[in-house]
Amino acid sequence: LLPASTLKILTAYLAIQRWGLDHHFTTDFYVEGSTLWIKGYGDPYLVSEELLLIKSALAPYLRDKTILQIGIDTSAFPDVDLGRGDSDNPY
Image 1 (spheres, helix red, strand yellow):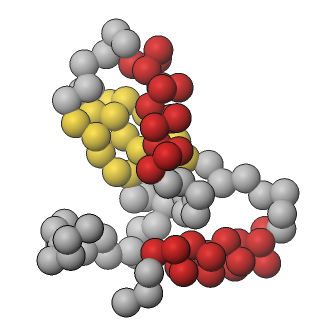
Image 2 (cartoon, helix red, strand yellow):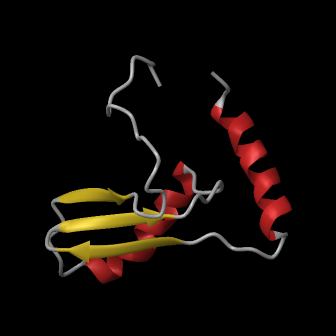
C-alpha cells in the first residue's frame, strides 16, 4: 500500500492538471434530525488540522442543535466502495 502522503501528492497533481491552480474544493455540512452530515468532493487538503478549524467555525451554528451522530454523505462518489469500516492497521 502507498502511504497517504504519497496519494495526496498524486491527487493534488492530478487535480491541478484537470482543474488548474484556481480551483477550490468544497466540503458541505448539513444537519438532518440529530445527524451532522459531511459531504466531501475529494479535497486532498482536508486533513485533521483542517477539521479542527471547521469544528470551531461550525460551533456557533450548531449551538442550539442536538447532534448525536456524524454521517458521511458519499453521493458525490456513488461507485466508491468504502470498505468494511474497520482496519487491521494500528493507525
